[in-house]
Length: 173
Image 1: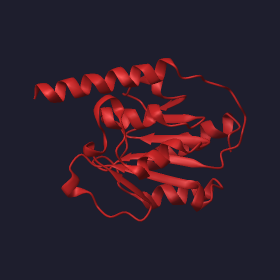
Image 2: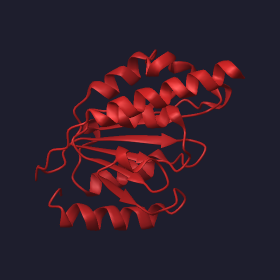
Image 3: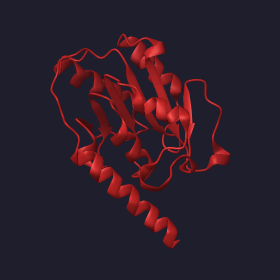
Image 4: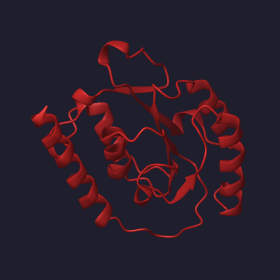
């Protein structure tokens, strides 16, 4: 139990370091590539995301989805993305999963962090991502995102409307 507390503290220190060194740059570049981080305990409908971004003009091969599941035994085989578990993270935010490393090294035009549960592993993925524009749900560390929507993960239709509205206003679509 003490070891887990030390590991969580090392995660938080790593996240703080990443967020303090983050440079935010404003641009009006249209969104052509999207990364999505899901917590399968809260939302697991991959097809909804694919249809939504198809409607926005994002090609299927430019949409990558990472699905986090807290219990490795419950991780489903997915067609749309990569499953990530707590075992894929080491001390100080070290990533042990090659697919996750590739996701983090991709320069997405937008990253959607679609989760409300405050998990250090999910926050590490969001903080480490090289995405230019980060969108998340309220209730998590506000420093992680450029746009925060106050929506529950079960309200996907509301999320779609709100995201479409703000991306239009920001001239991203």
